[in-house]
Length: 287
Image (tube, rainbow, N blue to C red; front, top):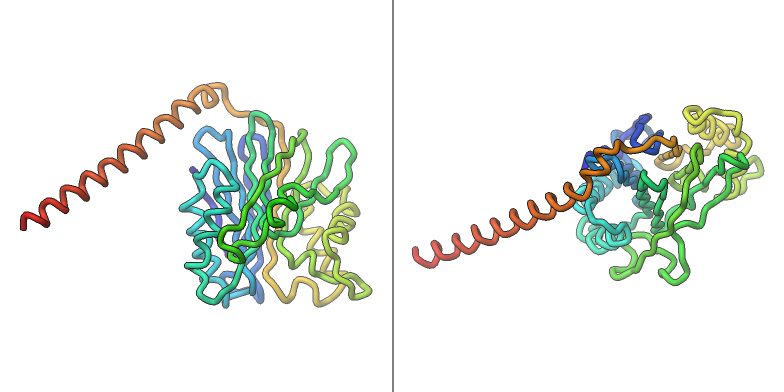
């Protein structure tokens, strides 16, 4: 998997088969690193792209080490085929890196380019917003939330919490906006918290902006509402656009063979490690 991510300030743009992505992250008080973690991976063929946005409780430099450790956990688990298993694995391992007892919300999305399908798993994170290119309107998505999945609790709350995933079919030029809670917890001019609906109202007012200007426009509009907005927490926003591009025929053709090769290499390395360990044990007993 090709991987990019971190917990530092960034304003980055990427294009992968089927998607354009924009990522903005700004740690609290311009710290070197913060508690928001962004992560992107793409398979060799470009058929599968996985995105993760997480928010460790707390902010700025005080939780940056936990955020870095969480990113390392993501890297270790990113090749799990099921993203619900990915979230479950992160949840079960998070306690070992969080001696302070903090937790993290997370949103994991997996995009399958051939069918333009976006699978979303939400672990206590603010709901993503989706803009239907046909209607031109933004609306909150409940994708990745389910009452039967213990409300998809943040990771680090309950060891055996269960998670579920929801699939969305994206049309060309549909947009998906994900963000951390510094946006939804910002205040309007009356001092009330924006919440998901408030953020949605603002992005609907920015419909004339092209995607590459939407994130700066959104953050500027939120700051104008109240001078305290976006000043007391890390801020991260990720925007996806279904661009309609596809994967080369030869890459689609090779994909099953790449999977089989990867499985064989994993088995081979595992067998070799076990053999080496057994050999070492025999030598140790002989000496």
